[in-house]
Length: 197
Image 1: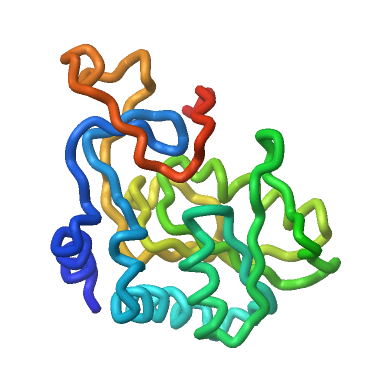
Image 2: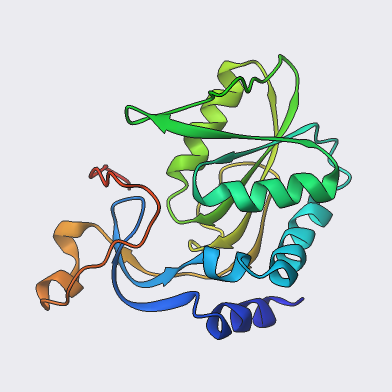
């Protein structure tokens, strides 16, 4: 599946939305990728995750980890296709943490999988958990990179679809100034404003 056809899948499933959106990062944009609308279809899930898994097949990955909630479905399918243990990190009292009996061992080779990367904040928090455990980051994979490669989180980083989508700090957002109603379709309930430059 080529990148143009991936974009076509997003459009045909209603997963590429246009309007005025508050992203998980807190930034605003006129475009929103609702990956769940694509990933609910097994054939799309398998193909998209197959591209990610294929990229990391020879990387010596031992464990796949994803930030909750958006990355879990993608991470689980990538892990299944690679035949690897798959876990997730989640927020507790605002901080990303590894819970539910999941753990990473010192030296364990870990791949981080996310659905959409905009600023990379959640992935960076997961990477910090990997480092704190003494594990080794193999790479970062995602379905969509909204920064078109500008956000670099790992030496080995791969996205099925990379395209630049403009986003704004809330105080600079022209959509707000135009009075266009704001929607927050993301998975994180608490949108705290962060300084992301």
